[in-house]
Image (cartoon, rainbow, N blue to C red):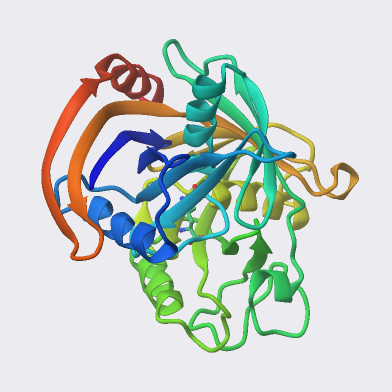
Length: 312
Ligand SMILES: N[C@@H](CCC[C@H](N)C(=O)O)C(=O)O
C-alpha cells in the first residue's frame, strides 16, 4: 500500500502521523506499520505512529498511537498535540474534545510558545494512583515509596495517565540506571500487569527535568504523559504546589504543565509544540514488513528551524 504521512514531533518525541479516517486496517497491520516506519535503520525512523481517526457524537476526532514495538498504548501526550493540530487543520477548528483508546482529552490551539512554533494545550485526567489502574500488583497506592520486587531501592510514585508510569525523584538523572530499570519493566515482570514507562525526575527550583524510558520504545527525548505524571507526582509528594504552571524540561526540549490536584479533579494540562517536519509517501506491505522507497513531498524546514531556535 502507499501510505501518506507527516513526520512530526512534540518536544523531540517523533512520530509518523497518518490521517487514518478512510483507512480500514486491523490492529495487527497498524502494529506492523508502526514497527516498519519506526525502525531507525529503515526508510523513516520514529518513536511510533499516530492515527487521526474519525470523530463520534462526543468527540470531534479520535486518536490512536502505536509504539515502535507495535503495541498500542492508552495515550501519548506529545503525539496528541500533533494529532490535535492535524484535526484542527482538517476540520477548521481550534479546540476540540478528542477520543483516545480508553479516555478522552480536551485540546486547544494556544499562542505560539515562540515565533513559528505551533503550540497546543491539552488537558487530561483524572490521574489515577489506584494500583489496579496503574497495573502494579501491590496492595495499595504507591506514593514516594519503594516497591518490593522492583530491582531498585528508589522511592517511586505509580500513576495511570491512563498509561502506566513509575516516577522516581532523583538528585541527578543516571541514564544507565534508568535504562536498566526500563529494560527490566520491558521484560514484563509478574509485578507489572502490562509493563510500565519509567521516569527519573529532577526538581529544578519550581520546575522539573524529566527523562523517560518508554514502554514499547526505549529511551526517548521526551514523553508527554510522563511529564504530566511527573507534574502530578510533584504535587502529590509535596515537592511543588498543585495548581501552578511549571516548565518541564526534557532532553528534547520543554513543555509548560499544570497539575490541578484533587480540587481540580486531578486533571493535568500540558502546553507544548506540535511541529510538522515534512510530509512523505512510502510504499509498504504490512503483511511482510517490506518497505519501499520514501518520497518526501513537502518540507517544512521553517518550522523545524523555529523549534530548534526556541529550544536552544
Ligand atoms: N511518548 C508518549 C507515550 C507513548 C506511550 C508509551 N510508550 C506507553 O506505552 O505507554 C507521550 O508523549 O505520552
